[in-house]
Length: 277
Image (cartoon, rainbow, N blue to C red):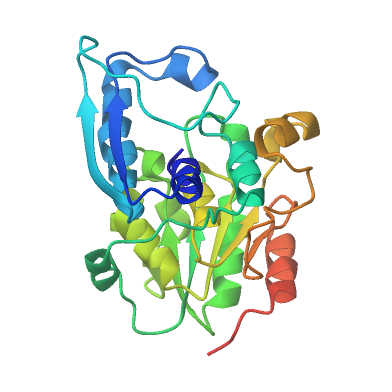
């Protein structure tokens, strides 16, 4: 939504953006909507959605509106979509001349997330929601071992797991592997960590989706893992077919279209030709 809004701002020639999140009620449409209680939805609203506003430099003011009375119709250029947050609409505005790679970490977050040697991040999906999309932790541990002689390896755990069973810690409980807990809890530090990395390797998940709206490097796996999206659904949401890339992506930003195993992680990494220290 923020990337789409920024594209619309660019094309309209506006100077900046004000965001009001109208949360007087929550939807109850998707399977995850039905699984989450109000308390967890409140947590995600404040801990994730509101903090995302700090990743777009042209957002000057943002706030949260709880009462339904007095809500104003938000000003947003018509985009021809019922849901103003789909990648297919970002793609349309990109074709009209907008630049969707617009999200950036705040300057102070970069100071807090600084690492002094070349590093690679591994972002794990081990969520309690749609577990069929989760990565195989042993395979990613093998990949971490493969990388750690050449780079500092920094693991970004899934927030659901970090604040819950913390299963991933059993696989990466190794002093030679970094563990970026703050980045799992703070979206600003997450993006600052990603921006400074040689490469960010991840399974397909919500937090890593933001990387394709930045200049940070990314190698993403598992786009269709678990059969959550079929080819028609993917194209309908994103505007391009399975197997292709966002057309605004940099050469250092790539979806692999393979499910992650040690062998696919290794082969796609080698094909990416990341710089070695």
